[in-house]
Image (cartoon, rainbow over all chains, first blue to last red; front, side, top):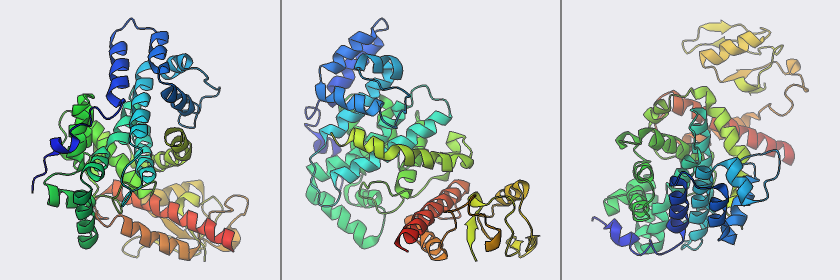
Amino acid sequence: MQVDTMKLIAGMDKLSSVPVVYNELDEAIRNMRVSASHISSIISKDTGLTARLLRIVNSAFYSFPRKIDTISRAVIIVGTQQLRDLALATSIISSFKDIPENRITVESFWKHSIACGIAARCIAGYFKEPNIERYFVAGILHDIGRIVLVTKAPDLAEEIFRNADRTGQPLFLAERAVMGCDHGAIGSDLVRLWQLPRCYEEIIGFHHQPNQADLYKLETSVVHIADVIAHAMMLGNSGERGVPPVYEEAWKETGLSVDLLPYIMDTVEKQYHDSVNGFIFN
Amino acid sequence: MPKLFVEDLAPDMVLERPITDQYGLVLFQQGMVLTARSINTLRMWGITEVCIEPSSINDATVPASILDPAAVAAAQEITEELFRNTSSRSGPFVRELMRHVAHRIAKQRSEEAAHAG
């Protein structure tokens, strides 16, 4: 059976304010003469978003020495692109609060995604990536296709979970066996529908086989590794039992030494609880 | 017979058992006093756990890191199960990650056991 992923995601472009806020901010940022106060005014229109962003920039996620109490200060200190990406991450999380919780709870799903996002931005920080929040967003989005699946096709999702229970195979392989594609492909189509940058399509689509990524091989490899670390540390759960198959080459792609692993895991551990509070519970 | 992870070793600890390589060749003898340098060497050889003479463990330097052998065994088993979809011989990244995951679980379990006891 080949499932039509476009049918699954139909209507999801109107579902939330996810693309709207992001695209408005993105357009403003592309206009080089834009001021911090203009960016702040776009964000401040949404009071919920404003409150969430302030909570996040004041959490262990950043560990700034002094409290940031306005969005305009946050824009200056955190950066415009970074704040745009954090706004995207928090909008996505708050847009998907209601999913059928037969197999995965919404809380454990986002916890896993947040842990993956923290690991990805931490790894990106080691190779001096100027905007590490892009990696955080990719971590938040990597399993979004599974939310689509359990929400739009609950019976199909249940069949896949049962097959995985019976055979013991990883969930994404059970998805491929039943649907002809996995949650990565569904998520990839969804972010294309949202008109998010091309890199997210590729990262999400190939996070279980980073060797097949083309233009964004490094980014895809980082998110693959981050997903593995989040599963290995058993932080949250997106339905998969255990660590999905690991591509050793993905680590080589980052060019980092394995000696950094304990530091990356420590960072994830330190930032995890505070970030979960900032992003989920509001 | 406390078994310590290499990360938790400190200078002046005494080896309770000889350290051997995979062929059984003795690398460090029983009773040897560890130094910062020899601990580094252990790490380079890829040795992960070492048996240390209990009397040589200074409570001030490593109070909480003596791992309960039952917790270490359980952590090993949980880690193997977690990574069942990946061959443990696949490469340095997987090996290192599994080692750190096992260490983390063993530490958590030891702490829980200490609290319960």
